[in-house]
Amino acid sequence: MSNRFTFKILSGLMLVAALSLSQPLSAKADAAEGDLEGAKLSELLDQSGIQCSDDKGLSCTAGNYEVTIHSDCAVAPYYGAVYGQPAKLTARAGGSGQDLVATLAEDQLICIKATAKSGISDVEYFIMAMPVDRFGKCDGVDVLCRVSAPLPEPYRTTMENCKQLKNGEIASCPQGWVQADAIEPYPNGLE
Image (cartoon, rainbow, N blue to C red):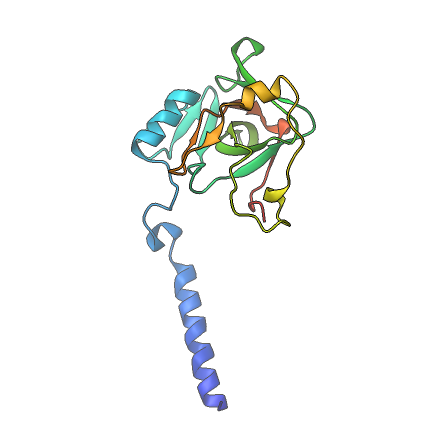
């Protein structure tokens, strides 16, 4: 290749990169794959007690907290795991032990559906436990392929109806609010 040809290609690539960075993300694409809309957003709001001042789920609160709603757990999950000890899920943000929904075992894989913040600090997460059989394709090395020991009671009973349906939806899995320090979020995914 000639230096002139190489220079033109590199110049073109730099121009494309500069133009793509100059546009806000909202200008690049419509709703992202997995964004909650319509019935799925309404279902999350009903389950969690989150209230939004718009129909897109962009300006939301739960109790005294500002809330960020994340993607659909079946399409574009924001993973995490129960960290350090079993986690107690409550029905409402800021909930007391009186509205306990379920208790998840330590290391339980979860999907974070919403984050409640006070200022810039995550205070609570609205989470859903993920079924053990969630991941069908494994190469044997991936963290998703590790077979965990059978859950002891009462966690086995808590998780017995949690499953992924043939259409990809996840059903009957425990969900609720949990303190932020009980969860280890995986913002970069599982890989």
